[in-house]
Image 1 (cartoon, each protein chain N blue to C red):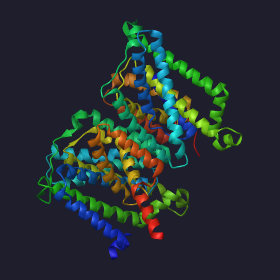
Image 2: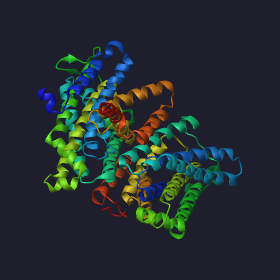
Image 3: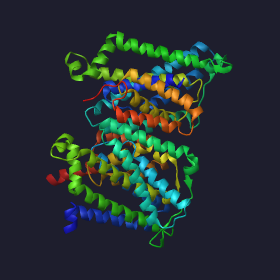
Image 4: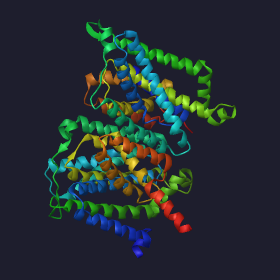
Length: 321
Length: 279
């Protein structure tokens, strides 16, 4: 158990992981195409939410403009596949993540010097700038039409548009992201982020360069958001400027809190809960936003720790008896 | 024109932030609700012009009631929590209100142009100019005046300002802080609702109007300074002018420019042009 223990995994957690992965792996065997598509969307959102939580959960700062990096990833992938007809997903993913990192690098550099509500407003303002760019630069981004007809590329020469290949690839990328992020948050770097969250002034006193750590966390978070977006583009086959709009940025905060931002896996759980909640609410009534909004209000008022946190508390109580 | 409605909305947003310390995401939704309420009331009020104008005022006031309920029943319980939760709760309202509007009024934009047609238009420098725009200006100017009188000349205004300066101290000298919070939130809601109601005769109410106006309102209060009414006014003026001339002069970058200005102000003076520096 050397590696698992080193990144902070216990045996029970490892078993839970294995069961969940098995469920996700076998999903295409018994679920309908619509459900598999939904699970795929949830996987891209899970990567996005896990990356986002690096800022919200581990650094304790609310970014209200994170949709921008998801959109940058999605548009980069969409443009490379449709305009330059690049077939190799390796190249597409690497360039999308690199572009997201570049954008997050510049914006993050300017934003991390400010905290609390000012940080939220700044990230929002920059995200709206990107939204305006996507909406108005018709020659590049096709304005409000967005980019349509994004085909699924191939990876290492294997075509992804065949059967459930793309879904399995998404699952693989999700597990890889989960492991990498788990390593990051349990590394000395991750611990330093939590120290900054608890007390930035004291961290500064013991010699930590607070803005630099915040900046690196912001860029990493932007990279995973961009990866989520780049994976979403071929899945949905269409990307539009709404991906950068502020309501989508609100959605990712919602997902993260819904799952539980105090627990590493929480946001991933939130992504699945949200996508399936939305799906079932939409099946019940066209006024699904009322249901989703009410759930959010109940969560905020009564279960602030989210699904994962509340479950954790319940299990903890039973164990202590 | 834009400046007037912007000011009504952002004055409320800024007031709520100044006193309650909460950035209200649902402020745009309250504006939207005000607009829809006005549509219904104007239609109900029949052909009488006085009733039609009165119904605009009633629409604004009714949103105050909505605000009061929201504060009493939900917001009250999370003042002690982190900013994230307050932001999220009000975001939840945004989702709910968007669909409440669709449920009650349908998906299509709704208009009630009675008062607008009634006013006719006059010509300024040879260009036709709708007289109703003067009503918007006079209407928002009188609301602004009333707001200043309320805040600076009455007992309630003094108490609201005192609470915003120091909550503990206000509470120690016998102010019922909870009640002041309710009043302030309701007052902010009235301002947003009235802003929505006023534009109704000239513009149709639509579902996306709340979310669109909210980001602009955030930009304005960020430029002017959170919690400052003077800031809300100057911010509204800046963005209103940018809107009016920007759309004609450089439509391509007009939206981006707005957020560029916002970001620059936030970077250099995070507390805005007229806000107080937080320590």
